[in-house]
Length: 221
Image (cartoon, rainbow, N blue to C red; front, side, top):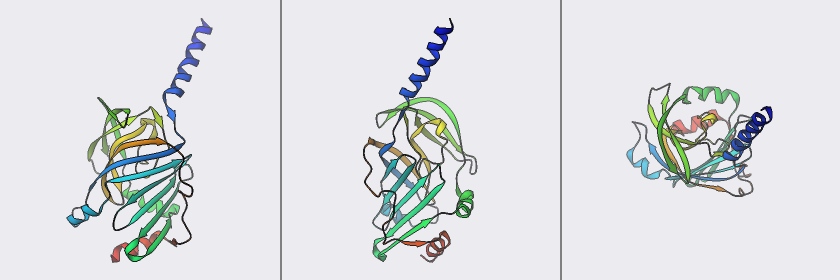
């Protein structure tokens, strides 16, 4: 009897490992829809990207967002709490790099959503993965939305998915915030492939500035 129980435990453990496929390196492409702040110029919507790409490897990820006005790369490592923003503004011929300090992260805490998830009964397939529906409530604003998670894959968090507890799985479709704006992101492609060399680093032509300097620049624009 003990052998049967032990065999069952081993089988379940192995099955769980196999069922949740850990992907250590690859690319995610999201279709995105933006929600502008109430005081924003409506024409700004046309300048925002409709697709965002994420490269990930090990514990690091970079979220790449490109528009006619600017290009931003958000590099993060959840384990080391490392966060870096690379901002390129072609029309100004400027490139800036901001490495966020613990004090900067603490300052941003008020703007970070706190999500509470409730399981729903629906399922649907997104990008080839079975997604479980959840109702998501931001406890800071009381706003609710729907999200879909899968436990078929295990992938490091990126700047879009980082506000969700990994115990729910990998988010396939969800609403969150990015660069101070609301955003709905839907995975349209997930590939296991080699990440381009240098994806998580800045070239020498980036000017290192502080978060305070970045805020000052933003207020003048």
